[in-house]
Image (cartoon, rainbow, N blue to C red):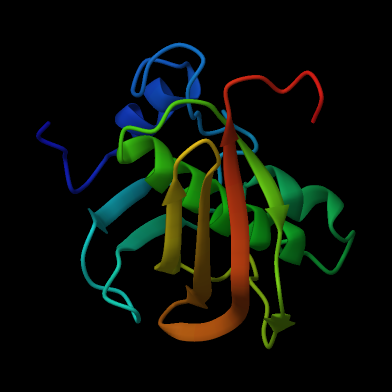
Length: 171
């Protein structure tokens, strides 16, 4: 199977509609919870561990929905949205590899926030380094990730875990 190594917003939206990896398989959320505009690189190689990487970007627009409500007179992107984007990308990677099932975040190790995304920012970049992929009865990816705003690293997460489940009834 030949896989693309980059995806534009239209392709990410088709993933959200279940059209990229097939019905019942990994999906990205749709707006407003889709936290990226493009995947600039996805590969089975590279990253900090040589086992794969994903690089994605979100263009910051002061009109993004969260700036109006988080917080009044002090707009900032919620840190949980950046963390969720990193989980979204690990699940996307598992689907991209051809694994069946629906993605679910399973946890993380250490998470650190060292900065903020303000409406004046231009671009957020996510960098995901795959540490391990299990593709047997259990399909799970484990990755370390970072998030940059305008080239400055502001979030890091270790041991992000995402699983794919063919049935979520007992999850």
